[in-house]
Image (cartoon, rainbow, N blue to C red; front, side, top):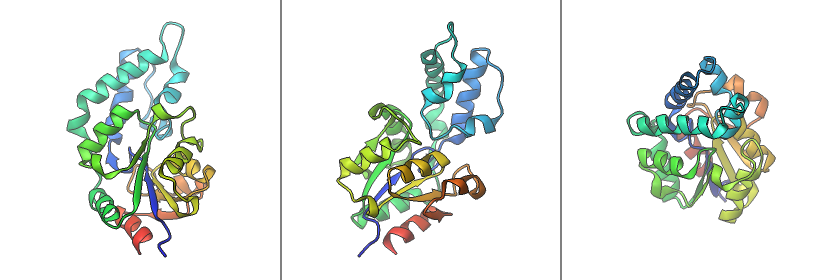
Length: 215
């Protein structure tokens, strides 16, 4: 019997290569509002968590989180289609899982509009039965709620579910939700950065995910 019958994927840094656009969007937002410049590493640490959570620290009485988010999203959307693409091997990985009858979902901290746009850029809008986005949950990753919701909507067995993500927040969310996890090492984070989250598996390439699931 196949070990995994359901696979959940994170979006940014896992399915789509959008990291440079995300970093550029942050830098643009900070420059626009006169906030102190930050190194890329500062923003990378928050990737995988909701945008509002990442920007809340910088809000003041005269500068709302909503204003920061609007600036970020305006820049991000204006540059999205020219900058975002699927990682090498991702499309063939997803299509192989679909062809084998594996049930698929996306669990992301991006809102639904942004998620659909990212999937469209990768040519994968039709591949996933369930999308769990920031709009759908009260508690974002690393809380278990996003993964729990995807599992429940798919009617999946936790022991037969694999969550593939690139960040420590993805791995922790999966662990908290009691599913198996695979750390995607083709994303922006190195293995040593993800070790503390104790993923079930390591995946150097999307092809490794296919091997884990289909054997």
